[in-house]
Length: 470
Image 1 (cartoon, rainbow, N blue to C red):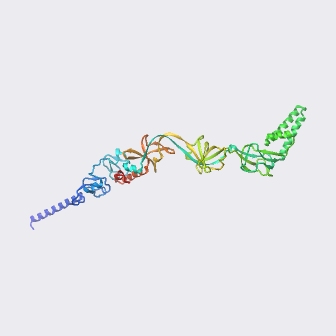
Image 2: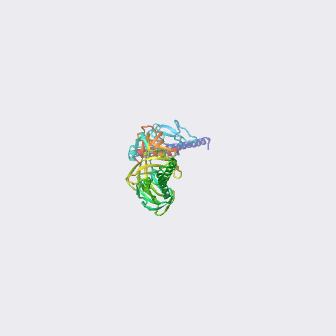
Image 3: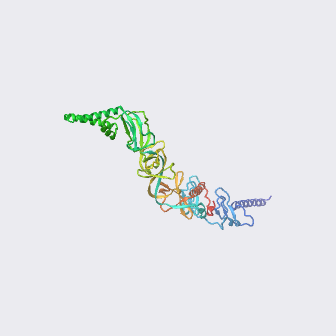
């Protein structure tokens, strides 16, 4: 082969290789070819249809953008791709870290663009919901404003007899019970009513000593003054002895009128009330100091309520209390808190609160089970409904309405929690509207967007919400 022919063949080979590279490069950048008779309007992101491009492109994972043809445009509701304005760029692992220009984080990952149609006015974490979706979810809002925040303290308790109205019948000397006038537990008695008759040798001796001293004083009216003084002292000591032993004035007057020693002495009730316990039995020997009857005046009773430790700050003496009992459904008894006991039960972490109740008809009986409602103190403070608060682990959130279907999750610090309202210490201003229904669904949507963005992919535009889809 001649030298000129060899050079010609080499030039043809080089030209063919160059043409092949150009064809490969064109095919790589042009994407898949359009079918015959179809016009390509634009290209969309394979994982995020809201991201479009006028020219063929690849996503972050190297996948080709999908072409959208002219006859597909009416189905997607798009007439032509619209340019999107980038507000800023944010750290893919920390949405609070933003940059006005593209950059990379410490691990070399690209900052994610944040578009104007995603976050109006730069409100990070806000979520958009279309009007139809708002109506379907039943989203309602309430304005944060100054209100009275208070809570009713609820507890359980037992009915008990008033300790100040309890009486125990005992003897100060030994004796024998010969006759009982009150012989049943639960029997009602009046003050001064006879309870039993008692024989006591010591009491007979004391009566005899009193009568002797009294008669001797009368016989020695004309004796020397010092003798009369001694006899008067003896009479007084004998009389005081009878009184110290519990002999009533009526029994003493009868003894003085009759002038004879009585074998049996009648013991009377010291107060009106109900016999709660009866230990006395006919014929038994009663020892000095032994309890024979326990009598309680139940015209007024106590309810001892067990209040949890965290509620004690809302309870104080003098507060109104409502009592309901299982024995009387639908009936309410009114009382007041009289005393908060100074110690807590270490096992139940509750403190006892004494409540006083009037019981004129005797409906409230000791050891009845009671349901207690104590009206806690209230205070004026900035408050929101309790239903608006979302407890999410370490944070407490409310969803603030920003207008035009935008809702912003907002961290707040709470104070007193009332029955219907909760005090807001920080994170919210008066007049801002918070979501009180469907807030958990909106918060879930916001969390989903944040989760997608944390993996470096922009969350899809909420077109399903715009059109009322679920």
